Length: 62
Image (tube, one colour):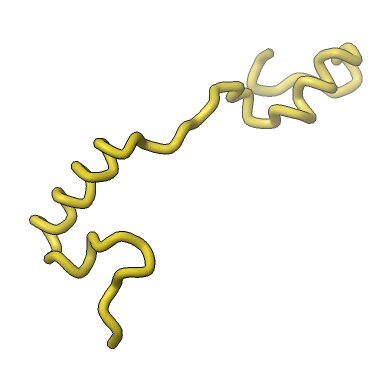
C-alpha cells in the first residue's frame, strides 16, 4: 500500500489491513536470547558500571 491513499478509494481488504497494521510493518519482534542478554549486560557493565546491568530484582538498594 502507498504511504497515503484516499480512504474512499480503498477496498475493504485494504482498510482492514491498514486498521490492523497502521504503520505497514507486519514484521515480528522477539526478545533477545539468554546469551545475547548476557552480552548486553556485560557491555552495559563495562560502559556504565556493574550496578546498571544487574538482572531485574537484583539492583542494590539506594
